[in-house]
Length: 184
Image (cartoon, rainbow, N blue to C red; front, side, top):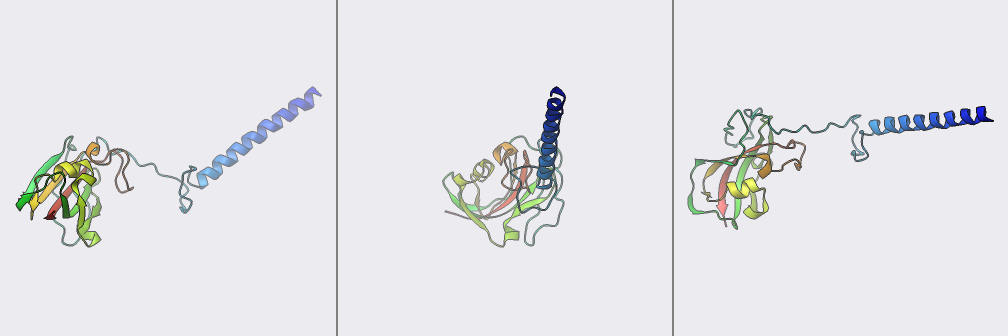
């Protein structure tokens, strides 16, 4: 009886191991995670690599039609908000409670890839300054209509480690050129 009891235990353990291996195999085929998108056909899930500490590179793709150049400062990423007026506008300046209409282009520091652009989207964006990332809220203060501004925004003033899109890596510094169309 001890012999068959020992054999039975080995069979149960072997069955549990087989079940675990089978479950892991199924999870890997489904994207490797219970949170994987069920519509994806990929057999692996790529974890986004952090861009923290990576240097900035030049724009690496063609600019959308009508877009200004994005003069990224190649090399170490800025650790504080960089604001540079490329064209100074006229009239009243923005304040923290202003709503603005802008054209813009956004580029990832570590890849040089464009992740968003009103030029590509076909229309300027309108929003209150107090409803956007801190880098924009702070970086567009004092800007006037008709002006164009370069913003270098470190991750802590952008999306940090939780970007809203896979086009932006966690910890990514962002570069924008913003053209102020109007202020209300």
